[in-house]
Image 1 (spheres, helix red, strand yellow):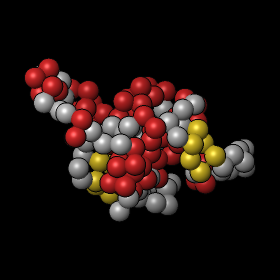
Image 2 (cartoon, helix red, strand yellow):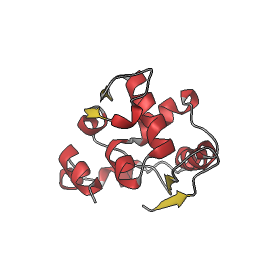
Image 3 (cartoon, one colour):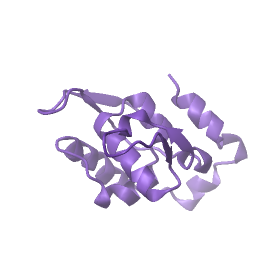
Image 4 (cartoon, one colour):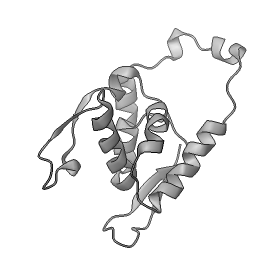
Length: 137
């Protein structure tokens, strides 16, 4: 997987990062509670975000797509949950256009055959700890 950093669009101070493909996290990792300071503003004094709550996850994902670096994206973003939220998400242009292309490519990707899925055994499954450790630079 590779990430492309795009220059900060007009009205933004920071560049934004977009992956070339999406990935899945194990359930414990994608539904955990996280401390996410970037969502604090004058209308919201909340520091802890529960990713098992759809509204919290939506706000965190919107901020990740707009401002997240590759390490943050790897830690918190799950492809299926992102795709589920996508129609409801408020992501500014041009971030929305770049992310829409990745989401569309994921939706159009061929589904592995039952034979390919059957080849995966328990030794190849990753735990949530493995996912988090792998995502940490």
